[in-house]
Length: 306
Image (cartoon, rainbow, N blue to C red; front, side, top):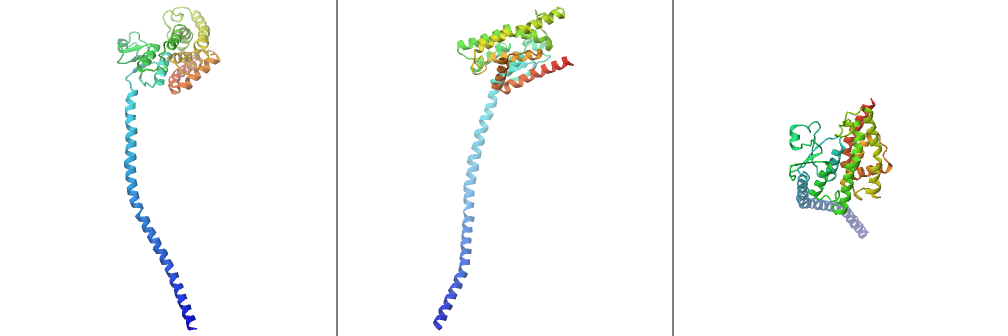
């Protein structure tokens, strides 16, 4: 009996002690873990945070900022462009300069081309006109000559190929446009646009209004033939005269066709698709200058209708 009691007492005491020890052990373990946790983050945070902030943030900022600062002056090539927003000749160079990434400083020369200052630099009083240090007289006018010059100077083969045969086709298309198609377009549209016509044109003469109207209609009718030449000969199944990419001749042609909207000329389907393809290919470079021409045409038509 005594032994049993003693044993029972001993077991009960042991169990009670064990139960009491467990919470203490757990508390001690938790305290140890907490101590480890609190001990580890501080070194890690100090060791990792400082190198990351120092090693990554500074080099990235330095690596990215430096090229951007150098890239901006590269685009500013010191070219100045005097232009008239409603003109397709001016639109041509404005589109080309944007598409080529040349970013010239534009000056609206509306009402300024006959001033002594302008005439001293450009006795022909024509726009577009660029000013560039590399030019013998400092200035250059005529849209096609400007595009050729800038393409040659900056190696823009994409717009004006160096290969003699390909370049000859671009030149031929451009000169055919200036010598044949554009005079018809100007004769047909300038009276409606309110632009002065060139010397020698019926619209510039003292001919009676019916004769001027007759000449305007005849010119509009004549547009179809040279237009088809661009489609069947110069493009010859290709997306553009330049092949898969618009050339300077394509830019000049698309800009010229913009003016026909003022007389509601019915462009053939291929010409509409062609102009849309150029605008899609060149994006804002085409859309922004074209917007000025289209806006002016809409204004002229609205005034005529009122």
